Amino acid sequence: MTNLSSQSFAAELLATLVAAGAKHLYLAPGARSQALAIAADQLATKNLADLTIRLDERSMGFVALGRALATGQPSVLITTSGTAVANLHPAVLEAHHSGVPMILLTADRPARLRGKGANQTTNQVGIFADAVIRCIDVSVPELGEFDPRALAIEAMELATGENPGPVQLNLQFQEPLSDLTPNASEIAVGEISLHPLTSETSSLEVVISDRAVVIAGAGAGSKAVEFATMANLPLLAEPTSGARYSKQAVIDYIGALSGELGGAVDQVFVFGKPTLSRPVQRLIANSKVWVCESKTHGHFDPSGNALGYADELIPMGSAEQSWVDSWFNQDVFASKRGDLAKAVWDATKPSEQLLFGASQIIREADRVLPAKEIPVFANRGLSGIDGTVSTAIGLAQNGKKTRVLLGDLTLLHDASGLNLSGIKGLDIQVIVGNDNGGEIFKKLEVAQLLPQATLERLFLTPQNVDLKALASAYGWEYLAVSSIQELNQAMQSSGQLLIDYQL
Image (cartoon, rainbow, N blue to C red):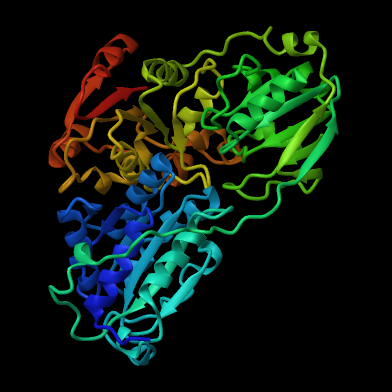
């Protein structure tokens, strides 16, 4: 194999990735990754790829995640060595648990420097453990042990295979670290045929009970709708399931589960990864359960009581219409957070995008949102609040108007994600349901155990951040609204807007 320089290796690797379809490149500046940075810029300058530069790797990871969520194509992330790599970990974990394709190009120092106190040198091999499909430790190009084109193709096939997710190429570089030649945009790669790993699809016929329901969690999609329709069953679909558009979809199924209907259910069919509410988890734990396997969100059986799994569930028979009708004869749930979520939901068109943060708002949204087919997203792989703003920015990079509805703590956790330096032309609205603290913790058992002052200090953590000043510091337009009417008017705006809705 031909021995290459750092720049030649980087140019061939990135040129091949781009030619294979990974055209969204993300870079956080650093010294050890300079060959990759130059190659990425060369490709972007010739409009062969899109290059986004972010100040910090943590935010970059979530922006890249959002872009991959929106497009289904793997984002390529470039970092320097050391803690830069570790800062990708939250986004990598989310990508792993939600099946989002990403290719991590983590620059490293030569292996001979590991464990010897060399600057910015740690063991980056295995740093993400099993959260990556594969970690390939690539020796310095001068040794000629790895073919950059073959590496790029392997990474693409792994990241976009039957069970997509993140792949790490840990790239050792030694001096000289960069050059202006060869130019990555001038490398002739030729036609690339990818062959992602696939397996045979399994199916399972299931007899439908007259007291069955379909539960659709994150990543459920149209399969849940089709099954519920064929079996004529109530569909309990979370807002971000991709299934909350069917006439079978029950609006306030959480309220229904707390009454006689919840106790009457004897059979549950699970699609995707339902993690939003405790009543649903209790129902799954206490019922006969069959699971439609998710290619993106993994194996779902937290209670260990599933009776069968398959890629396709085929209903045998259907339920009486009276059973379905009984789920729609429920009182309407009302709350200020629910009103906020419904207003944002109603305002979002099928040509636009909506992202929910992990807060109390999405849980109350789950009780009020009507059936509607729009692109809805959330980081439900691990249900964390980290990176929500950054994820929204990545979503918006596909050119569609994007709204993100989140709580004030979720916003503050990713405040640096508001930095749009180097990113232009986004049409994005960050809508904050502002209750000055962690309202969601009032629903936990600990709220009944602790004095109010201790609960506030340890969990509710009231905040006094000036969101107007925060928005101004990062160049966002700011609007404070106090009614749904004012909110509806604000949502008609375009550009980068932070809407502060006081709860």
